Amino acid sequence: MREFSVPPVVTIADTTTLTDAVWDNARVSPENVSFLRRTAASAGTWLPVTAAEFQAEVVSVARGLIAAGVQAGDRVALMSKTRYEWTLIDYAIWAAGAVTVPIYETSSAEQVSWILSDSGAVAIFVETNAHVLTVTGLRDDLPLLREVWQLDTGGVDAVRAEGERIQPEEVEERRRKARAGDLATIIYTSGTTGRPKGCELTHRNLLTEVLNAVVAFDHLFKGESRTLLFLPLAHAFARLIQIAVVTTRATLAHTPDTRTLLPDLGEVQPTFLLSVPRVFEKVYTGAKQKAEAGGRGAIFARAEATAIAYSEALETKGGPGLLLRAQHALFDRLVYAKLRAAMGGKCTDAVSGGAPLGARLAHFFRGIGVLVMEGYGLTETSPAVAANIPSAIRIGTIGRPLPSVTVRIADDSEILVKGDIVFRGYWKNPDASREVLDDDGWFRTGDLGVLDGDGFLSITGRKKEIIVTAGGKNVAPAVLEDRLRAHPLISQSVLVGDRQPFIAALITVDEEAWPGWLAAHGHGAETTVAALREDPALRAEIQTAVDEANKAVSGAEAIKVFRIVGRDFTEETGELTPSLKVKRNVVHKTYADEIAAIYTK
Image (tube, rainbow, N blue to C red; front, side, top):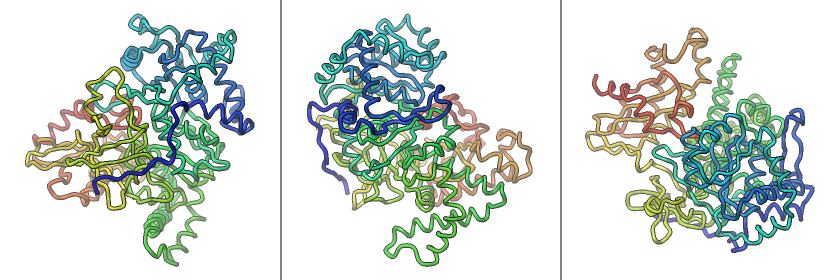
């Protein structure tokens, strides 16, 4: 199949904007708990914020923005970890008729300077003293930037106080004048190469995405639905969930630190989660390590195999057999219930995006009672294009296009997308916009894929990442890299071999899995990966993962040599984007000597 289209369930009127949900919620269901908020003053407990209270806070902050001179269409930047104030400020900016420009709180001074200057931001909310120092050091080069408000030192209260001289009716006037086609946000792609580009997303883009997606995921947003958001809200994926929760009157809690994720899950007890695959991998690896450390490794291994077999059987005509159901019930009491309890006890669904999840992990989680629905999208597509949904799941694919989306596979296998979710272009960059948007509205994703006969989409690689060996063989790295990452000991993998005689891989070790491996092999707890890169037992362990991955490809595409890297890739050292994608160009540059040595021996 070359093209698959799903008609919209909801279309967006010209007068509709993102803030309408806030006002509707306050009118229709004022006592509904929209947020759970934890503050220093609340002694760590989660305080409810009702729909009426949230609307009042949005109006208050919007009045302050207007008082500060923010005009309709002005850009206001927001640089902070995920927290309640992020969502509050986002909606206040929209209520004032302005445009939100998210900045990852881990961004470098150079990145902050580029985003603020390119967007022409007139004000910025920052979180920490370090952020203030960064922006202060850039002020001479940012003539348009008038205001800097710091969240940690009462910046939001200061904005509110300033707004007391502005009548609430001025906020309502700004809202009435706004239109669906107006710019809502400029999200700068973190980018694995080159300088970030600002993706222009309108109110219509985001509302088309959200209102159609929540129909597809209707059971996630019903009754007592709640979620704990821990991904950075500067990422379009997290932003989508924020808007969806507000729109559907579910409950949203924020946590900025994944180190406290397990206790936070226990306190909030979310009914669904969203995450990137790396977090699901860590949940699995952590459970496996804990079982092995407690002498229950064999039980966990049998439970894991049973969970995967049970999930796979769900896709067969007869479903799981009697013996498999009995085994599954036993392990549900012994193992699976404890894993679900670690996720808060009420979580039955999760959405995964940002990178491939892998069929084995998807089957494992479905087998333990948590359906992880994998999806696909880009910032330029608001962001979700396709997803597995409860009524249409095919593990190993990224699902069918969502309502309002058309997907086409070009002659060179590139995935093309069309619909009202597609952004209107890159901010102040018409040349880059023309490269990805044609006159008929098709967006070139740069990803390669296939559609099966039922319209399920699979990603086969990234157009710019195709490796062409010296023998002329085209190799898509994603297939092998995804399989390598499925091994509990492997964190990241990067294939190399462009214009070389064979394919090789750079592999990093998972820092959380490393202590368990050291203990099992008689090494001291302080031993580093760098010290054991050539250890026969470690190499043998990684070789098993390489052998398993190679089963998916031909001999000409298989990994012939691998090198274990002495440390994991991180955002701080430059190899990962804030959304945890590998920056291949940085890896190739940093490890140029390692790569060269592979092909000179």
